Amino acid sequence: MALAAAGVRPRAPLTPLAASLVLVLEGVLVIAVLAVVVMGTQLPADLSFARLDPASLAITAIWIIGLILLLRAGRGLLIGRRQLPVLGNACPSRPGDQRPPPA
Image (cartoon, rainbow, N blue to C red):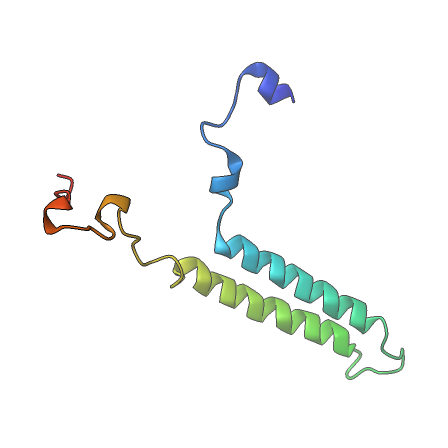
């Protein structure tokens, strides 16, 4: 509110800036970790190995694997790499209807 009153506004809406598949994958990782946390509370208290609960081991493993996968996804996702055709050149009805490529 104070930033809006001061006149500091982003030049673009936030929705396109946050339209990233990596953000969706981060949300899925958080949900997966929280699901394991909830399931870990249902385990018996005497179930442990080397003073570690199975839930804490599972949480750690999911978190590390998720971070590795997020790093790989951040380097480049295959989704969204193909170029979409320009609307005017998508399906020309006659050969002369094609526009020249922009210079």
